[in-house]
Image 1 (cartoon, helix red, strand yellow):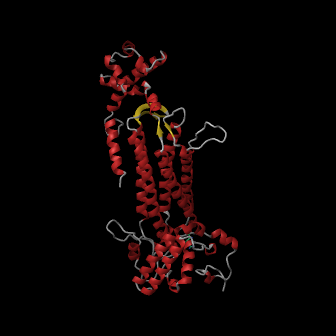
Image 2 (cartoon, rainbow, N blue to C red):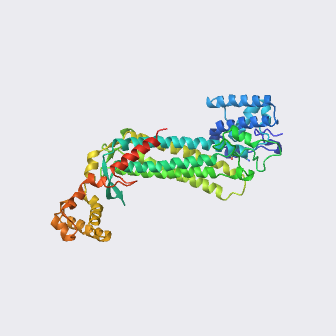
Image 3 (tube, helix red, strand yellow):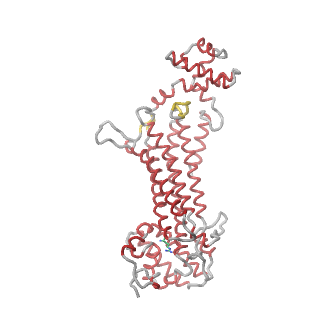
Length: 467
Ligand code: ARG
């Protein structure tokens, strides 16, 4: 008999795998991260086996006590992982079997294929909760700045050209909308993960009288009313990697949001904008230029988003050509999702730190938003108020802008006579349009940047973001 350490399947083999093959095929170096879920799954499986009479209550208790002890050893860092044993499942099973003879029965009616599927579904439920907590942490930091700086106005931009004045808070609350959608996406992914595949076996279930609902309930795979949720096709259950892809997609989309937020901050912190100053704690200096304070934290947020997209792409490509059902290619499904979770969690923590220390330069913001051209659209609306069709009003205001440019004066520095020479509908009250407070107050509809709406939104977010 071969000395193959992988006694779980060694029976059929007469030669051991080469050292290179062991090195090539091991996954325990990264899937050991699943140990806590693997043990949780095995505890539940043992409970089920005893429940249906496939093992005795004493055997169940011995197995569970052994698993608990292993769990403690692993948590304390004392467990010796062996790459020759390939993956987390075999490492744990063999260590357990050495200590608890009854553990030789643990793999009854179970395959590593449904085992890894259940481990990952447990992982995703926790991973989504973690991502959501980090998102909410960053959202709270953004909200705090928005609330504290509610009276600061900045130019809003389209095409990176100054467009119209908006409260800085309105811009920051736009970020919260993005983050809330991310939060919701992770909730959906967690729900999709919430189906128990155990009992699918390798591909075709088992001939043994197992109770799938029992295991599902023990592991928390239940609906809102506490009813067990078990997967409905054994082949799909071991082949399906949709939740991996959905999780990576949620991370990639969150990454796109992080990147856009970061880009706003990079621009705003430049001397050209000067709206904000990033905290020293999240900036770096230059090894050569003593004056430099670089927004590396935000640039890395932007950069990490590429990595999150790459992980999604890896998974899509990994799965796309595979015949049903399990193929060993699928072992490569774990590093990208682990990385996506770690990076997305880190990114939101960094964003929270950047926001918590962000200094808003109110004077620079006020200077930028004082540009009267930002209210050219309001001036067109003014003419509409006087009965002028909007297209005609737009054209007339364009001519007014051209006139001001030709005279090298601000839009609001033209005389009544000059604007009336462009369009007769301009009256003595025309310059009131340039009162910023008035202009903002007029934007009172839902979703608009008027002060009453911003106050309402701030109050809504305070509610949403306190648990
Ligand atoms: N380490 C394997 C993976 O991650 C576990 C499943 C192995 N199943 C198998 N039939 N080799 O995919």
